[in-house]
Length: 202
Image 1: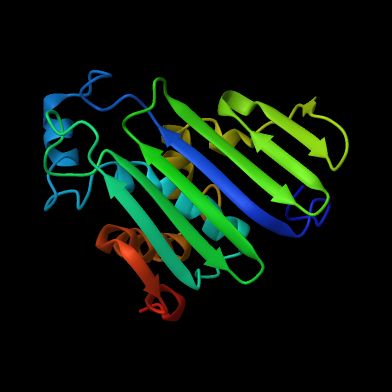
Image 2: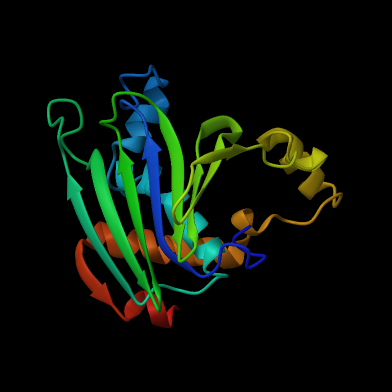
């Protein structure tokens, strides 16, 4: 709907991703050790869950780099995650639009949600295909999104199809977009207000 112009232009994007924490949900010790190592993983929640909002914003902005990246990172559970952040907010600025990425290991439940706000209303995308549209003075109205292509049934099916050359690389998985994501996350890890570096790129 956003790409077709039906809900254009996008003005504000809000992404909420995360869960109660890798230890709290029972992740394997080897994986947790990597996640909480600032040298191995590069960050905590800001990298673990900031990547989702960053790649979605990059996709919705058609690959454009943000003109600025402002980030706040906190360690709310220092007894469990003393060396990395477990809660982060990243704000991306684009010409005519902003994106707020809320990445955390401190939610009370796991969450994968996105809100797009346009001049005509908003779109809410929740977990497991929950989709709702709200017009300027009406709504919200629940709608059913179209079925995914067979190649996108799950991550293993998708990987198999890509490796075998049976489908194109989805833009969200593309090297082009994920280079921009890496730049966004690096600017967010540095904290503060980063202007220009991400916009120029490598």
